[in-house]
Length: 372
Image (tube, rainbow, N blue to C red; front, side):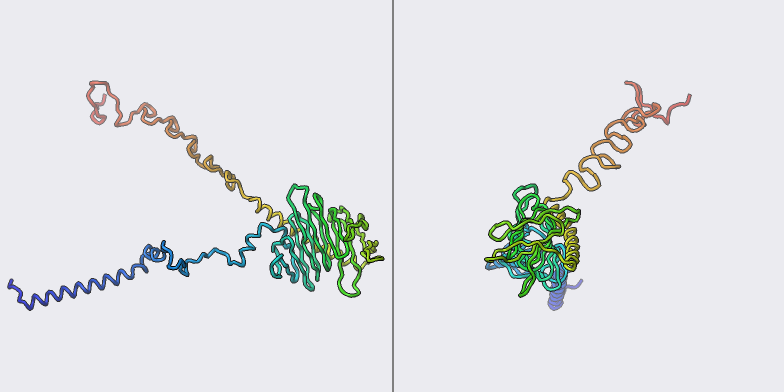
């Protein structure tokens, strides 16, 4: 082969350099496309850097997604302080918490101590408290929860509600039986002794007198309502079903509890109110029971699984771990039918590679044995 000339050598060097540059460009383009084709490469790009961003600020994509806005944090923290729940709602109603703005209510909303609840025109609201006491508020009613203390099995339970205006029907429950339950109005204080009743506080010029009515419970039981003035003086007591007092101002501004005959038209209206109360009470009780079960952690014990299956123990209808196998087969023990591992087989037949012979006796193969 003839030696290259200087010109040919120079051209060969240039061609090799061009091939090298072409290969490098192709390799760079291939590596740039790897994150889109290799999943582990894409995950590597999306990982959060371990070092904080400059000035202590996190990148926009690193904000905590599960963190509640500041305005919602108090509500979540105060969830354990709830004392009741909205059971039923027709129309519109609102609640004003102690230091919060007035907000609209909806079914299943929590109720707290010192809440002020109001219903609008042509509306009604049912609230059930933790002891299963239920109130049904008719339209244009203003209702304040002054106090509610209830603990199951405690004898020091107490509740105080204020009907400032409108009509409130109630079914007293566990607080009235195990403690002290009161309902106040602008004119009087009512001591409730486990019963059903309706409190009317009309508003406006020329309005009717405030009334207090006692009705039988759904099971026919009749409790009692003691009536006191705002100074604590006892005015009377209602002990008969469908009986009532009208609260009338007497001489010197003192309030008197006057027996009141319920007119037929008003009695018919009360029956509708009591039916609505009964519905709210039924629904509210179920909601309260479910909420109390969640509070108590009403889940299955850790040592029992659904369907009765036990962990690390016998499995129903299946193989037993670390124990007997199906059909009684024992691990590392005699096999079914009496067959023993590494022992003579049934009928005395010996394994081919385990044929016995006497010491000093030459090995004999079965294929070469002479037939007798």
